[in-house]
Amino acid sequence: MKNRIPMWFFCLFVNANILGQVIDFTAPVSFIYQGETLENVLTDIEYRYGVKFSYSSDLLPLDQKMFARIEEQECKEAFDILFEQTQIVYGIVGKQVVLGIDTQKVAIAPDQGLFGIAEMDEAWASRNMDLLNSTRRTSSAIPVLHVQNRFRPLQNPGRRYVIEMTHGDLNSREHLTIFDRIERRETSPVAHFSLVYPVGYRTSEEENRPTNIGLHLTWGHDPSVNGVILAGLGSTVEDKMEGIQLSSFFNAVGGEMEGAQFTGLVNMNFRETRGVSASGIMNYAESMKGAQLAGILNISPGLSTGFQGAGVCNIATRGWGVSQAAGIFNISRGVGDLQAAGIFNIGDEVRVGQIGGIFNIARKVNGFQIGLINIADTVSGPTIGLINLVKKGYHSFEISGQESIHANAMLRIGTKPFYNILRIGARIDERTWALGYGIGTSIPMGRRNSLQIEAICSHVNDRTFWTDQLNLLNQLNLVANFKIGRHVGLALGPVFNVSVSKVYHADQDRYGMALGSNYLFDETSYRSWRKPVNVRGWVGFHAGIRIESR
Image (cartoon, rainbow, N blue to C red; front, side, top):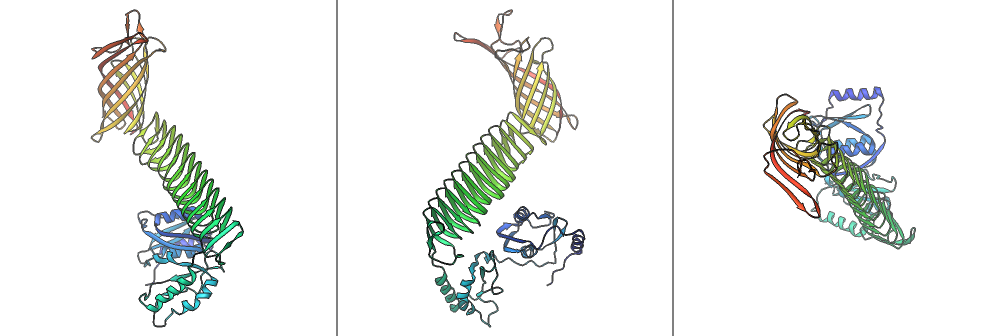
């Protein structure tokens, strides 16, 4: 059935031609996706090639698994292959690629076995063409083996080619024999021994066959690897590396790395890393799915999923579910899971939380923040710290009175699960004033009202500008907040007070602050090696008017 393109897409193409296409559809692109979601695929292409996709997330099947392998093909041809497994159609408007759905389009099921194809050079194809051609039968519509377009170049035109296997009559003894003969001819292990590159011996002269076992006394270089590499100083791999790479000082991979790398100094991977990279100083991966472990620094500028652990810092500039742990700081742009650092964390969107010794900064936190100072635009969970600044959080200003401190001004900032309290107050009849800090939580009571549990500790300056002795008023407030307007509330509730003081009043011959009455307890501890301490407890009240942001 022939696909029909909607008329609005025709208009988009016309507008694109009038404005001048900014995106070069003839530019070569390369990517491999094996079961990635459509959303991740679009995000990856945007980052790697500067393409901006415009679409409605309600229309596109963003959770659909995508399968595609593109090697140095034109952008338009790559998009055609990528989207043929969906009902997506696209057009260009300025610098954007607009995506839509054509319900009349017939999606072609992707060949998931495409990732099992073998990459061979022209010499291999020439030697085995007799075997490959022997599998072609005029009576079979789909042969077991065939060469698509005879030869199809991959990364290095003129050198590397692909032999594709398609499903056919696999029960045929003749065809199974062909498979066996090719396997025996071309799959013997390749070993590489070297003193220092390029001085060494390789058991195969075909550069495109990967090295299976590599032993290098100093620095060794391999075109590609599928096995184990051991190097005295360092190891470099020109293309893809699958397996284990172990050296004393450095490892570098020009293509994809899938497996594990261990080195004393630096690992450098210039394409995607799937596995573990561990080094004494630094790991770099263009994109990552796995773990980076370093004594000092980890960097991943591309799409990153997994874990970064470093003694000093981790940087993931386009995270997608990456967790970070560092001795000093973490920086993550994109979507991160958990950040834990000795000094600070900076994130964009955090799905679990941030734990920082001094401060945490994030745009959106779908979890918690724990640090001395926490700053965020939006936080869904608690922000636990001395100062919590949440732009779209909980903010209130209150004028209130208590029996102990008659007039008070209180500022509450943070989130409703956990907020900070700054308090200043004074007694009307005396030269006594208080400065305090506290924490609290708000528990909903219906749609409008709430119960707030707060702990506040205030330093009381008793009849002087500043009292330089221990003179603390500790309060536990159980306050019901009744909304009387959209942003106005009435706060009422009991206060449990405990004063701790070393202040001595000579005119009254007593220790302790002159606050409260009807004490539940009033004890003064006398010890010869310490100044006496007075502790009193009583129940008071709290009443105030609040102005709240939300």
